[in-house]
Image 1: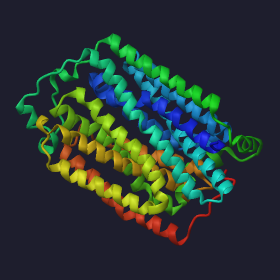
Image 2: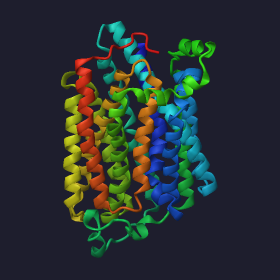
Image 3: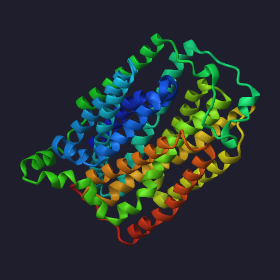
Image 4: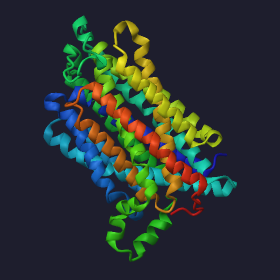
Length: 444
């Protein structure tokens, strides 16, 4: 018999898998599906800017009032609204639903992280294990299931849009501009960027709405409300509103959190680079847009498997060794991308980079989430709100300079943030090694 806490981890993971099968698929299609006047990319920028704003005050308020379970359900409803906005995409539908998604995004992720951390600490106290080991294992299981959403979301779009494929021949002159060889700001993908038939778009978005609603039902029906008592106690006390409102910012007084900002922002930079720059300047440019889904499926599959592997491996190797492996892998990929000139004859190479990137991203995601849960057990809601805020800032900055800076310089910026992360993260890890943070058996 599996434990009740493990069952809850599975329920949360399956809910997020279903939700992000829809959102992940829509996100990777925005630049081509809603290319008019850059509307798709603009909507993504609005989403992450809204996440930053919501991170400043919403997560502690919602989690402490609603509890983790119902905060997750409300956050999921915000994501589903964005799918509805894509049924009839326009500035008046995409922008408001992007704001709604962003406002619900930070509470959703903060509640998920808080819930897994509480579950891990409870299970660890029952089994007599270290809280950090169980938390690492739970985050590994979550990301193993969750990251596979990239496979299913892109598979759905590939199968549906594959019925209307219009593959164009890519001339040799265009191949000369692919990768970091050219500035990469004006990639011409010819008819490969032709919008699919409207009927197929409605079919795909309808499927995404369906799996989004399914995610809400999974969590609403099957997830235990493990922090219900703490939420009712919070609502019954007289803690000043401003005390909770400013909880996210007050935690910045902790130097450990400030020192982790480069690591957290790098997570946003590296994810946005693969889904935006790599797919556009390497895959679409040299192979055509019809290959983007398959490349992102490779990334999602590797990410999913490695999340599960590293979640279990962390107890034997420690976090630092895994972070070093991720940094080394990304460093090697960035250097290779600076010099590689993509060509259709080198088809396997196009999949090597997302596979390696997926392995590294699995470490960044599982270990950074677990690290925040371990370092700030008394302020989990505010800590994970900070995590989403700084990661989203990385996304926003990357999207902001996407259409203004040449690809070569984008790679140098990514490399610079990675090197800064390699310098700052060990400081926190060394301090934690010398002064371990005591876990809370009854985490609040």
